[in-house]
Image: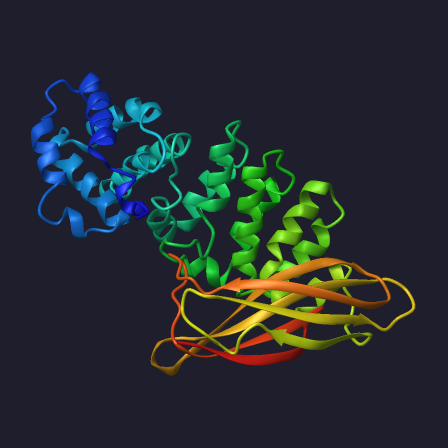
Length: 360
């Protein structure tokens, strides 16, 4: 059986490294009390982020009571505590640093070099967005790619697994100012964050994002990559401006025939195979964005839809046959339910044909 994600972090070994680093700065550190507070009777039932918070709270009880004194120690050990375990350090700032804004924000900019402060910055952004976005603009010009990425990732309005930023969902213009600084960043790590940020904004302000994309597309190969990935939600929704920018026109000369499913009844955990013929009825090649949409059965009779890409390329005249397989095994990000499902073939944003099947 695969090891659970939450058991891969905050192990006795990694906590031991944590303790060793702290003891070098604070010899009086009570490691027995610290480990006892962490691994209490609740530990096994806690999920990963809750375990991180438990380590943070345990740390607070074992460091000097004065926040700034404790913070200075954590700043010194940050290079030794990397990865997910290192996110305890910005979490400490989030939990206990709201009375010391300047010191706390500077510490978050330091900690993010070694782990990530993207979650911890968000309560600060929520309370004083103008002040914190000033820091973000400065961080966007930092020599360290982790800090530049943080400038984008930390202010994503809908960052997964993090608190939402309602002010930026309503008005993303301050976020766009940061993204403008990062749009041609040499680091792919940074550019991925910029694309994801654009994608977040597109869910609430599609026209704004299309205006940005139209300005950026053609500026450089880097901005072209950002635009394509930042428009992925709009492209999946068949947004015509997004499709046109990517060189994809209508689907009038494209027909789908002979959609065949390998089975009309599957069990959760099975895979379905499907095939279909796509006809380009024009006399020349045509750019095609080809996807399939699955309407999933959910709990209590509800449904949800998700689009999956098949291909994006120029299609020659005549018939082209496509074959694909889709798994219905449960994932950490998707749970399947028994019930009626539907698969739809989508060509250049236009649904063409569909068929039904069931899971049990």
